Length: 211
Image 1: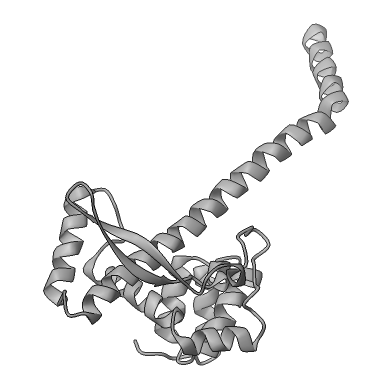
Image 2: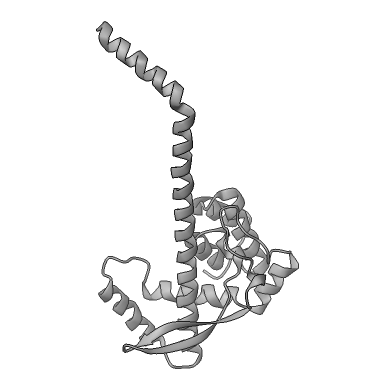
């Protein structure tokens, strides 16, 4: 019994002796985990933006119709049966996401409030002003080597303030670009990406968009 207690005391002494070093190691782990999560968050929004842009382009050029979008949703499900969030309705939300926030009206609001340089604390992306407003990207590959490029409006940095769930809620409830900008910033800085909190905010403040 005394031997076990002595061993325990020795372990505690060792822990106290190395606590600062252990905290340093744990800090490294935590920092990289956070960066990985932020990178995944940013890439996810970039992916949704680019898919929305591509489908929007096909719809506007009348190359696709509603039926083709349904077929796309089924095709994605066939290719990745375990993947969630790729329903017919969700793909249209991606189109809405791109068309809403690539619009001249929204970007004018962003500049009006000085949010064109906005970067969330966790985001280390370059300012969109350092990039071209319109950048060509290669989204579709036909066969083995034929690439179909489209022009893609650069995603505004401010969109990285919150996640996709909140963006869907904000788009559905808010009527104006100013409201959308306010709630995505509020979600990022105050609600910490809490969809539940944002839902309470948009409800209690009487924000009612097209349902």
